[in-house]
Image (cartoon, rainbow, N blue to C red):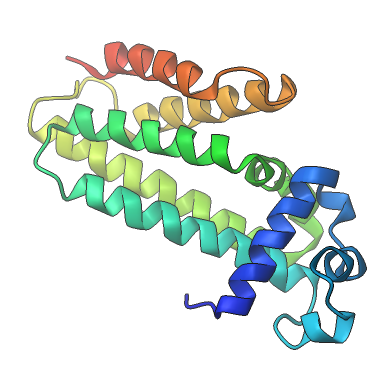
Length: 193
């Protein structure tokens, strides 16, 4: 998805506002005030708050997908690819803690079909990517094949989610990159043959 420079500015201001005051305080009025815009000026770029949140999710998904594609295209082992992907994901989340507030608000989106569909699609794509990479590692005999790729992906995604949730619950005080490294060391033991 292509965003204009002004839309990216609004997306980043929205992310900052969520980080400062929580998702519930992301309103067009608060966003306009933060950006020193009029409310009608914001509506020229996005129809409503839902469209801003959708854009925020898609914008960051594209950033992550681009970086991960570079890792996947590299000539390193499957396990090294997973390690690099996790390093990047935890680093990206640590730099963008407001994303955690959005990621863990998916139950708030259950009554908003637009956002629930976006979150579901992102989760489906992540799961599929992990499963495919695990299968690649299993074919190369780098990852154990006595556990299905789907179950290994579930273990990995659950571990990532728990690590990020613990970081959020600590008030973002824990060292997320260090906790991510510990998670990878455990996952590597599970993944290896």
